[in-house]
Length: 158
Image (cartoon, rainbow, N blue to C red):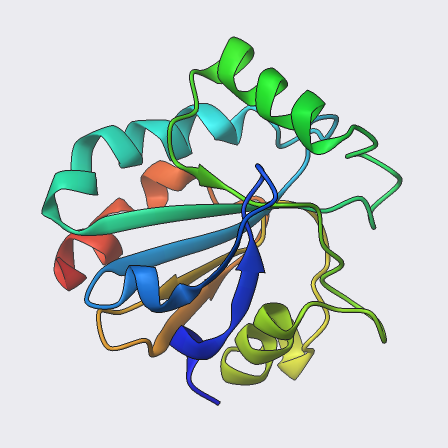
């Protein structure tokens, strides 16, 4: 499967393919507004401001599968991210990342970069996947990995 063929829905409800991000480095993150890691929005936005003009795209996918930590509507999620963290990177409609209803993007990401001990399951919110300019999944990062700790890996790909 080619990552650029995968359809996603923007937080505003428009269906697009990831072709929009071809030739860009992507950091894809499942996000939540009521998680202990929610403060990572600040670090993700910092990376966006520093590197978007050099070819980085951060894609945030809200997910409510972990203790219902993303219960809001798309409008509420977007408002929360904008008001509290000044988020300008791309946000998408809420999706599932695990189970039978997992979004095709996450099925692809998990198959390309397994987690701890070879597990494909996403363990928690703010799991991050780094994808190079050719659409290859380079690395998977744990939820506890701060965005600043990924910066050197991003810089190498830019």
